[in-house]
Image: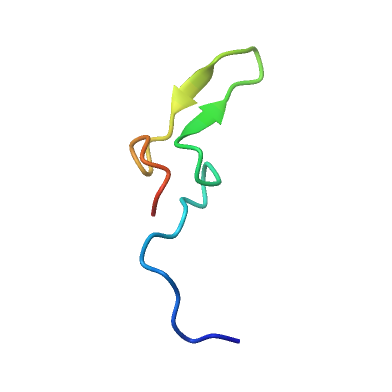
Amino acid sequence: MKSQQSESKECVYCSGKGYFQLILGGSETCTSCEGSGKK
C-alpha cells in the first residue's frame, strides 16, 4: 500500500465526472465538487 496519494483525487460523489446522471434523463452538476470532478 502506498501512503502517499496524488493531490487531484476524483470526487467520490460523481466518480470524477463532475455531474450526476439523472434517472429521468439529463444531468445535474455535482454540488460537492461544483462540476470539477475533483475532491
